[in-house]
Image (cartoon, rainbow, N blue to C red; front, side, top):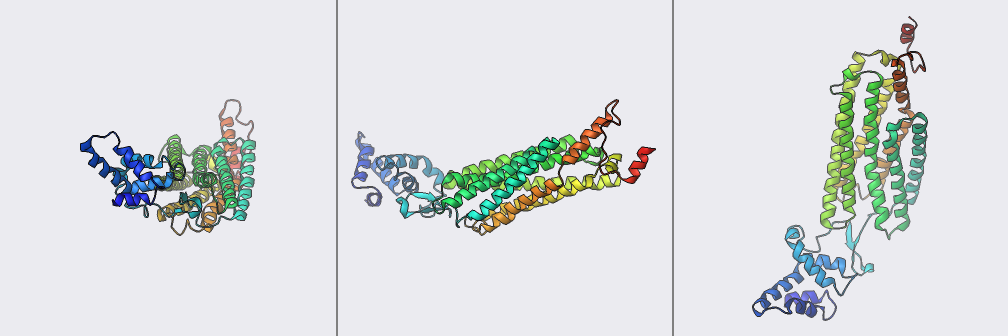
Length: 390
């Protein structure tokens, strides 16, 4: 029979007869023909061949029975998406002769650069250390997610360096580390940026310039950012499963998470711009006391950088694993590594420590008996100084 001849080309000698006897043994005569036809169809099933190629190299004795059982479960689900074993796999997977035709990941379509990975590893280690020092010294605790994001970038480039050292025999661990940590780090940067805007509003006492309450604004944007973070993380985790369905599902989840991040960033920039315009038209006394505009421009710059990076990432995953962006290493360093390092440098240069200090000073001045205690002038204009003297 055709099913037997096809299966015989896969199994070692005598395995086909053993499988048939396993399914036909202790069966009633009227059901023999039905079981034989069912077993033969399993040999021809693309799902059966897919599971067999994954499993036969590890357990050649029991693989046929396990694969037939899996075929009975998954064939109805995968029938429309896996017509043959040849086109069932994405570009990132291939059959490698040096591993006994076992199905393996092709993690990269290029050889990762060790020099580039080490350079960015050192850069992110340095800038993250600077942020940690400034955060602890100034007690700017809302910058904690930002520092964790820098740590994620550092770990991600350790993973890329490890991948470069394994070329061409890459393993799953370093690949997942670099893919996942570099993917989700900007979401942590965004969380601190959202919280800084709320504190700038508090610093200048400008809540009336917002179209939404300050506390609600921070909660909404941070919630959207956290949701986007978990979506991207879960999608990145699914990529490691190695099956067609999990890879496609993971890619869709990542794209959705990135799109959600882009939407929230767009709304954030609009909110910040409206606040900026309104507070300039109706400035408070604190607007003359503190250099709030400098921090707003810093937020704009970092937001645009992360926005551009997220757009490129969406395009990367939309193109698929045979796309132009993911197939060229230079783009991850230009539109991810360089942009994220620039964002961290901007935040280190225009650090929110000044905002936290101004809030503490304002709070202290409002307390009874502390109207003048502990006050430190931060960028006062001459007009504001004259008003104080009066």
